[in-house]
Image (tube, rainbow, N blue to C red; front, side, top):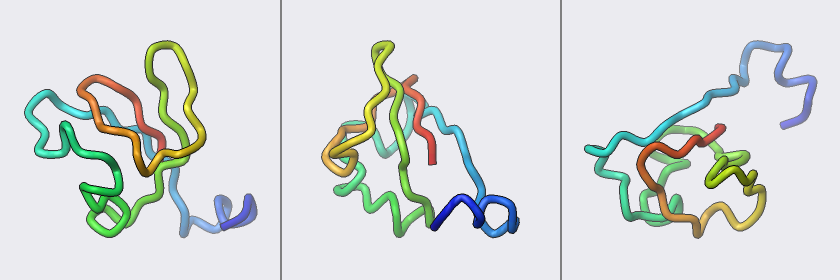
Length: 69
């Protein structure tokens, strides 16, 4: 993917927040098979006023946090 793909309409940017009832809670992105389940790649996570951009596969999903896919 490159920046040109965003204009094609084939790629979308999504902001997601995990509900307190989600079955994804307490799983890492890798453990939850997030990529194959939602056909989405997590680009960045906003947690505790910090932007996390690396090692996202091993991050555990928490309620109320923002995930940009």
